[in-house]
Image (tube, rainbow, N blue to C red; front, side):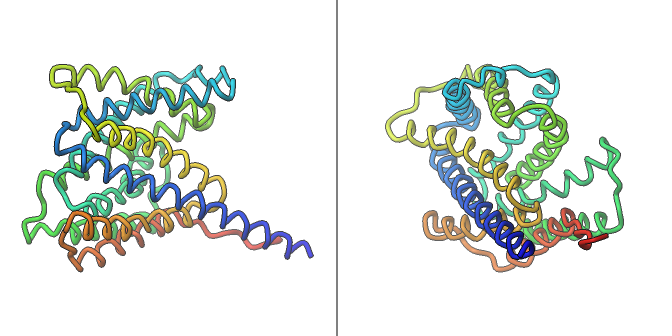
Length: 296
């Protein structure tokens, strides 16, 4: 009976995680579409400023609404600064890549982030770089080589920007690992916007323009989807194993590919399927942890 109850609880938890991940998938896709639409009339620095403004209002609203005043405080402000410097420039590269590359290629290259995290964790956190992890990294970056296909002239500034963005996101994850030990996710979201907003204003001040018409809507979508994607992903990770989350997260690649083909008439390259599967396999190998047998 206890085994049956445990199975039901695990099954319910997995379904709950799938529900949160489905929200995260659509959030990421909405953010990419909004960024693409904004790239025609607003530069990347202005988009980042608008994203941070919406994020700050949203995170403050959530904290005030729940009256959890302690969430405005942190004992690791320097970690927040380090994380957000990296995250800001990572976001810059990602948004710039969205304006220059097919959406499917942006997402495929972005999925190298866990591989960079593996390498950086070994260097800065002293985590063991096992033979399995080395194989995963080699397999993953071979997949990236296939995706960007430099022999066909696809290794361009956009691909390099997204690769650099993936490195920045991974480096930021090193700080995040330390922050989640003491800080609430809402605190991390609040400081993300509070730190990045003045950065965005300072860098975009000379070129800052007033959005017009539907651009206001797309800016709101960027800011809101940025918050919901991170929040939903975190909730999914609380509900199930990280290998399940990585697999479900990868579903946004075929989803954004369909959007790119049918909405923006982007050309689909079949070779990307092979490269993307190699990156997925590498990520799963990297995060997989065999469960101990019951009773051991």
